[in-house]
Length: 146
Image (cartoon, rainbow, N blue to C red; front, side, top):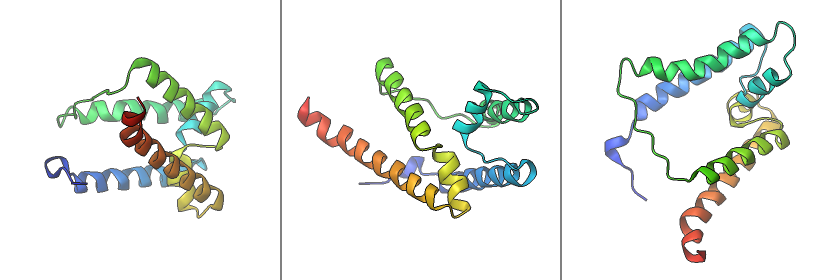
């Protein structure tokens, strides 16, 4: 394994991680809510009175932030190496996984681990293990089988 030094961005990555952590901390400290994207989006499917505004603002920020960043810097070129059917199946599997895991990587990995939640530790370990196995299977085993 080698590092692509021309695209290695440790400072930008560190800054992004700090910003994500700060946003998650602000949401829980100021609003008493966990910054789990699946839970925030899921809360819009069955909205409760007075609970929609902050959810829409949070999700809107996820869309607007990269667009605003694009005004000051060149956005990386998006590459799609999977077909449409693969993306649909993957999206459905992620959705099912977040329901079974009672949250997603942002809720468990960022917020749960920072609160020292044993459930989040187990969930994040399961996410990472499944990701490792999937990448290994797709990159190393799929060529041999198909």
